[in-house]
Image (tube, rainbow, N blue to C red; front, side):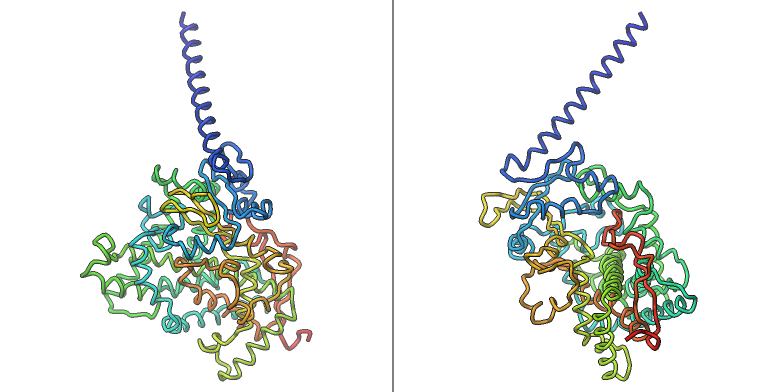
Length: 515
């Protein structure tokens, strides 16, 4: 009798489980018909991953599966894909991208990806993550921190660290070692973030620091758990919003929050002033402490100060690190371009008494062209996301993008389209001569985004990417070391374009360099 009862219970459990799985499968199948029911073509999704299975398996980088659709469906202005069960519209037509990012921005105000602010992470409330009235207000308030006047005041901090980067190069040459520019430029960029953004000097080019380790892990999780969490949070953000799951390791959030808290406390107690980005935020908080920002919910608090130091991390770390690394790589592969950059730098320095001043670096037009072409082939971020915040009818189409729908714009694919950039694999800075760049379609080249949400820190990004390179180029010739993998492969776990195995470069003193 007991055996029969047990068998019956097991049978019921099995039946319940089977029915539950069947219902889940049917629900997914219905979700996976979303685009077909609207007449939108696209690649076939796989249960339960949609079109991001290879990202979860760590075989492809974030966004790569969606970027791939650009060339698979090149004749279509848009296609429909899925992040797990979430429908995503991939925009292929740059003119449609212009409508979404610029002309009709009021329909697409949010980045749309998972916001750590929504689950109460203390550093998640910076302007990259937020939207609506508070985003507009805070962006307006902190924009003066990125004006040329402010950047000039920050410049001595960057210049000092760029000189430390040369010392790093000197030490490696003296020991007969090649330099892994992936690691070198990451440490260099993180040192600038620490000094300018957080107001601390870590000496990170000479020793391992917790600041570098925590900051790097913020972008490139070291554990499988946080890698998977990062992927799911990007591709299925609603799940995380509803479950209240942290996107970032709390130890990282706590480290940076406490660092800002301690630094601000020290400055207030000692009446200490330092010309950096953090000081700008402190002054903003002081100026707003007695009055509301917008409505009452938009008060600029200490949490906003701490969160927006992470904005500087967003704007100043991985983008500068990858751009500087890949620029060095491309110049090592193209010695004639490297020589032209060096000659430009030497000519400009001669006009400025041999000093690397803010004005001097600002005149390095060809060097900026090299950085622009680097960001075309190796964009720091491969794509843009936007979330529709009210129903939108696509121009010249019957398709209505529903409120809440995620929209994806494949920067990398557009910038490598031979119909837009002839012979796109060839590294050619002349594409970005000032007169040509001025006439370029705004959505043909978008390494900093486009429209009202375009990156505030783009000018600072050029300075940071440039300074260590140009200082090194006045002393050394760059050549590729055999440890560099050719062709380069991109790390699948990297949020930006990080090179698998690193970019290894040899330094050769100019007096011994081949001419």
